[in-house]
Picture 1: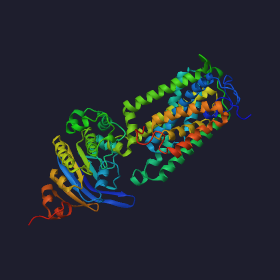
Picture 2 (picture 1 turned 90 degrees about the horizontal axis):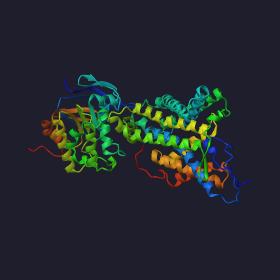
Picture 3 (picture 1 turned 120 degrees about the horizontal axis):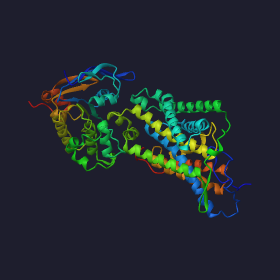
Picture 4 (picture 1 turned 180 degrees about the vertical axis):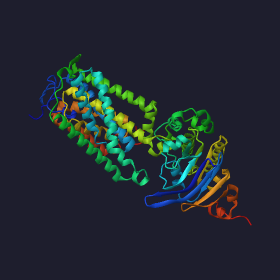
Length: 335
Length: 235
């Protein structure tokens, strides 16, 4: 029946028709209890944090290279599968799983840069730097890598959902007054907040972070102060991919859904957050990712969850028409 | 042997050759000016020296070490720094961060030596570099290059777009920087100012050096006076 809503935007994290029964259904004419709004806000927060982790990877890489990394969604997938493999083999505590996944993410990022991006940076004269063909070639090569990785994972693991050990699912309920959330909401929030805080520290206080910001701000100027721009780009991929891989395993364990094409939808949502935030602003991307998460989880109260994806695309269209430079405007620190 | 030696430097953009064999010698503590109109290849020369553009043939030697086609970060680490055309500062970052980046691994270690030359920057440390005035940005650009304690400083059009009072200030600064033991290669369209501070000068036309000599001699050479100083030699 039109107007009923299965509560949560599962598609938004790459999963359909699977959710805890505690998230109820409301008919079009039934009043929505206040608690339910609070509950959806809590879910929206963790959803937004996942988008934020993803969006940061996009934004960092766009900042230093001015190209979109279409393989970012596959880094998320690789992170989830790496975590699952580690869990199946050694069953270590979650923190160890996360550390391994982050390391795998960093390696995946470095490999991706080497294969899909570096070969197109051989030409450093002005004509090539400004060439659109060059940028589009990089875009296509990252898309190609993403397809190869997705298919490779599918050959290795099959296209169906992987079995996640039940005890590793992050779904033990936690009651906060009238609101019931699950442990995954808290863990995602804490891990994402720690990673965002760590990223701010790296970007503001470390040489690597300053170099990343310098290359984003002025690539030519970076060369004149003696920054090794190639190495800085590799670092950027490593840092951005760490975030994406962590998001992948967290969501995988939250929903118990790990499958080869799981990175596609979150990749698109993160891309929307990046565009809304102004393409190269990390604070902008994080804020817009949170707005997106909240809007999607609140929207499911009023529309069927299959429609919740429309929220993100609606935001994208509104942004492109009315705020072509992002909703926070133009000139700003690019990273 | 000169500190910076450039021999028969050829640089091409695509199929077009821009520099057709340039020779430069820059001695220890010397200021050499490269003069010339727009489009004669001055900035191309400077970018090739800093490793931004590839050299097709010829050699660049810094203190006896060959730095031809070395990566830009290696050239900076060897002690050749540039305040480039268009300033290329990090506009979205603070003045302090610009200087930290200029210092590279040394960070702000040289701040106490550099800042006295640019007192205005001391008052602007927390401000975004892009919010500075044109003159202040030019000073930041030069200060940033000095933070790495270079042996050779390249200045590409430091006076471009500045008010006459600031132009004088910049050329005075160039003389002061030399007193700290830095050798300077300066590219300028403002021939009068450049010849005032330089020891030697060369005039470029169409990617070649067409005239070279001591700055004082060039300043009174009728060809220079007519073409670049806007006047005639008296008598």
